Length: 76
Image (tube, rainbow, N blue to C red; front, top):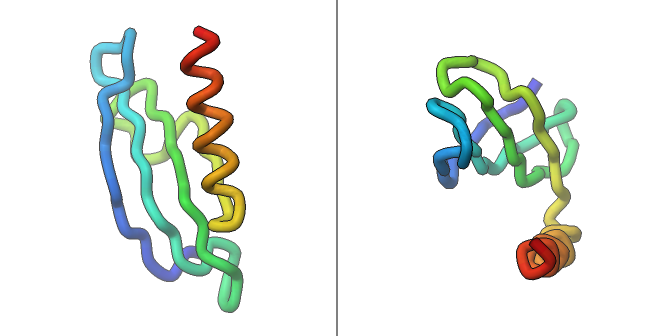
C-alpha cells in the first residue's frame, strides 16, 4: 500500500501503561501517484502492530489542524 513510511516521533499516551502516539509521513498512502500525508496513530497497547485509531492529514491541512489542536488544548 504505502511506498515509504518515515517515523517522525513517538510520544507516550497519557493515562495508559504502554500506549503511544506515533507521527509519521507516508508517501503514496493510497497507491502509486497518491499524495503523501502526515499520519497520526494512537496505540492503546504499545505492542500492537496496527494503531487503534489513525488519521491521515494532507500537507495542505496540517497548519489548520495544528491551530485547531492548540485551541482544543486551551479549552481543556
